Length: 267
Image (cartoon, rainbow, N blue to C red; front, side, top):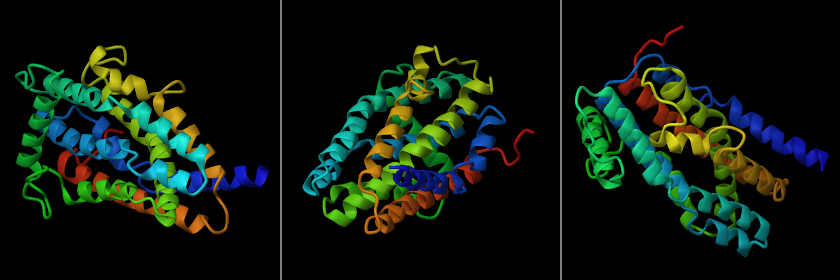
């Protein structure tokens, strides 16, 4: 048991030592209030990426097929927990954009389709000329490649399933320890937008943040799940999934950082 705990911690250190964990994007996002267009374009890439991570697809069934019902249950719990977060994220994004614009951009923050369409329009304006940008979805090449990592959940064969477990492990550690804290630092702690976690429009962040937040529980789930399958045979596939996710997300953060955020961070 102790050896397994050490093995899981070694995987966690690998995730947290990757350059994406403390990416300068977070620092730059927090150093100054973003204009409405930049905020909207950033949120468009972010919300589409986040949406791709919520769907379990064939992943839980693949675990059941391998005789891993507890792992399947743990992954399904995460999927259920993430249900409904799309409207919450759109509401928060629209609220931040409204606060940064000279005029109110979104009249109805509860109209998810209206908000997401507005975010895309700004993304098209600011990022549309980048190589590989897809006008139909409004996504950069890097966002589509990060999303493609999670589309592997459509496969239920054993190798894909174990690789997907590695992807899930890295995702939840990054979400809990890097992405959600980074969002909180940029949107709330910075004071740029005058918002609080108690604001109803910021419920998405409140629900994910801290020891009682969704991401903390998701990390506990993936740690328990991976501890039950990690061995000499599965470790290479787990590591492959971890690397695929971390490298794809780093590339997405790179393009957001270079194209939408201030070049210099406040000290």
